[in-house]
Length: 191
Image (cartoon, rainbow, N blue to C red; front, side):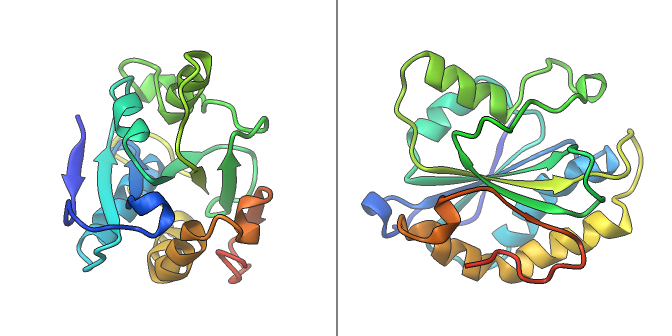
């Protein structure tokens, strides 16, 4: 079930369409809630250039949502082995991104990466997609977000206007390669 948040009208400079910020994650599973929490916090701000969509359990229905967007930022919890709270900015397509192994928390084992891969397999042309992964620490039902992940959620929300302007520029260096920001690296989102 998806929950559309924020003002549904307005334009972003890229191709006359707005930025869709898609926050994924189970709000009842500790650090897995990071993406949904970023979207919840951002949706309370007045940002006419963005649509916000919280998707606790993303499924195949995301395909139509993605195809209708101008630019997409997918915010989700990741597990790469980096310290909890590490931020990963990864332009799609990316060979280094694999679905996360949290099937015990998902009723269907499907997520945004599977949807992106399905779009490619079907020959669909996606808008520009950036993945913002927030490295997890605590991941079990009923847990609170860890301090490290909570600090990274706050950093993403605080720095979102800069990230938004970089995402709107197809020539920004942000689109060239994946970037990782450790918890003590306050340069997020980079240049």
